[in-house]
Image 1 (cartoon, rainbow, N blue to C red):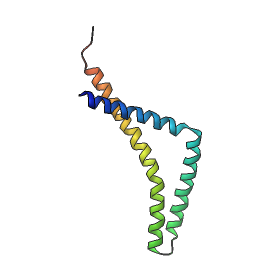
Image 2: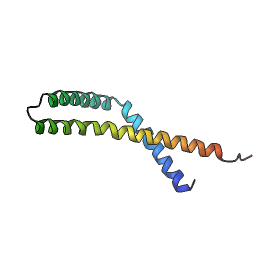
Image 3: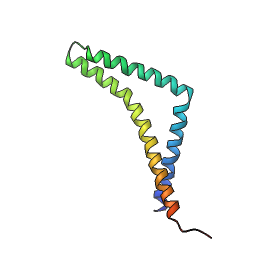
Image 4: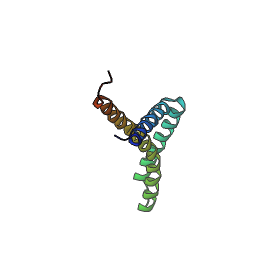
Length: 97
């Protein structure tokens, strides 16, 4: 593994830690509750939409809220993979003894 690859993995690992802390923050918990309410409302609204165009507009709005969750999950998962790769690299290094 090159130093640049190692640096990139360490950066991803750090970002995942930041995202995990962010998700634990009380402010995020408030945001999460609001997003979940809006997603649920949008799903109910889009099922009852009078026209397909209205339903599509509502669906797009709900998918934007879900993008927030996708972003957070992707950062955390990328950090988990980075942690595993770094651990594998550390285990593969010969002992300095």
